[in-house]
Amino acid sequence: MQRRHTRQKQIIQKIIEGPGKHMNAEEVMAVLKQEEPGIGIATVYRNLNLLCEEGVIQKINVQGRSFYDGNPAPHDHLYCARCGEIFDIVLSEMKEVEEQAARLTGAVILSHHTAFEGICHNCRKDEEEKKQWN
Amino acid sequence: MQRRHTRQKQIIQKIIEGPGKHMNAEEVMAVLKQEEPGIGIATVYRNLNLLCEEGVIQKINVQGRSFYDGNPAPHDHLYCARCGEIFDIVLSEMKEVEEQAARLTGAVILSHHTAFEGICHNCRKDEEEKKQWN
DNA sequence: CTTACTGCAAATTGTTTGCAGTAGC
DNA sequence: GCTACTGCAAACAATTTGCAGTAAG
Image (tube, rainbow over all chains, first blue to last red; front, side, top):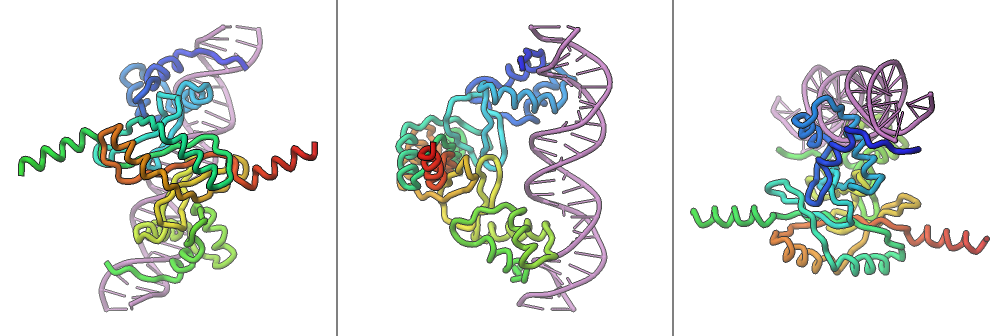
């Protein structure tokens, strides 16, 4: 089954690809409405899933909602409880944690995903500024 | 608003409560059909959400699907890609990983959840036995 | 020319909500 | 007796699928 490089797929790939991008299908649709209206939501889902299979992007799950991550390399995420943004994190210590998990359970660990919840750098600054005003 | 201890809630709590239990609403329903038919799926969802609010259980997300975890204490999970079961893991090293994440991002980390994917102890044994037969 | 892909609508899945009746306290 | 909770159906959100037509190779 030979894959085709359709116009729709190229536009969708351009929107989602690249590190730091975390969008759901609805958000991709919103961008498409500006750039190239007429593309259906089913096509968006189909192409996002194809891009996942091809290893161009990956599907992640943060705070119970799923997103397509423009960076296919394995990494973890921080969700800011204040602004709602998602940030990539690359943690050197997770390799050892995987080993500890393997030792503890007797399992073979193939991969992992960690979702941190907290207050991001920007929102922390905002809150400190507010404190000064009082 | 004073909460009531209804018969339905007690039965649902008995089914889901306790460490090692990871069920979705449908699975709780399946048990209920044997023990106490007539309870509606909406009641199951409402009570599982109430039990979460009360801190008796917690809602988790593994492999893109959500489950209610009978153990409300913070801990991580291993998903076995072979048998599909979910196992609890308590990892001492995750505290340092949280600190590394905070240092790296400049954020305040409030909590985290890690989902490991791998092959569990039992399934590993099965596969090794299969190898011996060949 | 072949058939993978598209757009649309309908179907499916997981979960929540509106409402009249029921049962804790 | 008051009102939180129930069961049911309907609503809702997110995603997938069936199908006839289109376009990539």
